[in-house]
Image 1 (cartoon, helix red, strand yellow):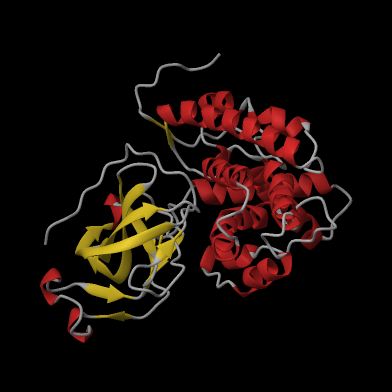
Image 2: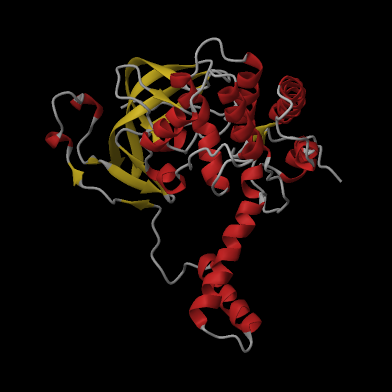
Length: 365
């Protein structure tokens, strides 16, 4: 029975496993590229060249999208590779597609990217479930229009029907990022590795069960070990060693600065963007990390702050504001974002959907 007691405004991850994954992005993303190419507004060769030359960093580099093959019926690559491809697709097309491109195809692509952002989100506001349901309806209607315009557009599949039930699953089980089959596949990889390394096929179930219990026990109990949530893979230095361009008044005695840090298994480094305030779906404030400060065991980020507006092609243009020292725990989203240009007004793409109800606290010195 669905839980309708929403005393908490956010729906966080729950340890439930359902199958919200689908091949809609894989097939429809490919069909959008193919249809744009058939109208003559897009060169697939130029698109693939731009895709292969695009600089990818950190968590994106291990899931580099594969080139589009028009002879295929879907985008190539694993699930996360396709997710990265769909996220980058509007940014790439903004450089290649002329203004006379079919607006219905572009609208379908933008809605597909928005669906992708919802599926990768860590938390939602309750209102987001309603917005998500409306987005699915709009997506299916737009897809019907594209199918009528381009008869060779991919056929309807049961996966499209499953989309209609995702809003219910969101309310029942929480965000998709922890309920999708990708989590199950990741867990399954442990058992495959144990099976291959043990070289034991006499009673493989006992071997896997024993190894799994040892791993779970090790994770659940840390009394024998000194654990830390902060790691320093980069070099450490003092504020006195900073360049003159960094305002010294933001630092106090005893501060330690570093260019890279890992907090709760997430790596941050100079040049990453973090979201500090969500004004609306298309307007937010973000900061480019200039320095990482450790003060009395707490992490602070020295940010060059920007006011950011989402463009038609779903990437954000950033306009400079000021500099501020922000406590790590007060940022709106803990996923670092990758800048896409070195200009005075940089650009970046969201990794996933962000609710507009998260708090923000900027600390004083």
